[in-house]
Image (cartoon, rainbow, N blue to C red; front, side):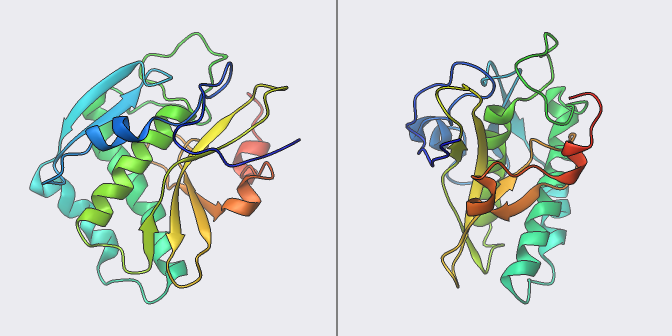
Length: 207
């Protein structure tokens, strides 16, 4: 299958997960002056949007994952993975998405409180920008969401990304494969673009 990177301006997919949000949409969902006020998507294709306010106590839980600062990029990617899960646990009760199932797709008819990969890639990108804005990243820079898929099979998949500033390698931070609050999956974009899926997803019996 021909797999390719598409930017935030990619056209909307016809089935499965759609293309990533536009640049303007993403920037408009993160308050420029604080880490406490932002917008998250849910209910597939960003049908529902929730304004979320985090308390200082909420954000302190996120900061804790980066204390002490990572000694190398690999350690920081582990911190990022865990911190994304923690943010989801904080945001879930605020947006009625705490019961979001792993790997939710457009095939299901029960979308309330669920997130497809467009929702997940948008939300994780927002969370990464909040983390970056608080100067918690030493080894990575937050990138734009990317998409894989093919117009023939119409099965697109989106994810958030970060770049290792020491090597220039692009890494995906994919929160779609796990249930709400689970650590995000982290793998190089090159591997992800070839159709990578985590073992926990490949062995599911309800796919």
